[in-house]
Image (tube, rainbow, N blue to C red; front, side, top):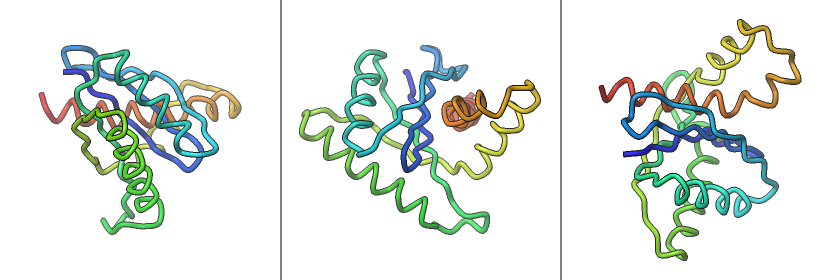
Length: 141
């Protein structure tokens, strides 16, 4: 079972993919978009190209566990993506996963790797997706 992990933002979607055995998460890309359907098209393509069975989406809860504005934006993005998939007569299981501090952890890792600010900015979203997906994979093993 291949799992695609997503870190959804307002202008980007970080994407990570599990290996076929479900042990490791690898960064794939950062999808940049101005309107969500641009991201939907690319995500659908990645799902089909990689034989993905499950979509894991980082859910940015507030530190107290409540839903904030960004969590609502993620829900809206997913609602639109599900409509897009329905138009394609395609379905996939989608799961939300608490992603509190995943971007902070990714940033810390990139700082430890001594990447410049410009390089960090280019990869932070897909690295956050890796952290979200790897946490999920680890919890399943």
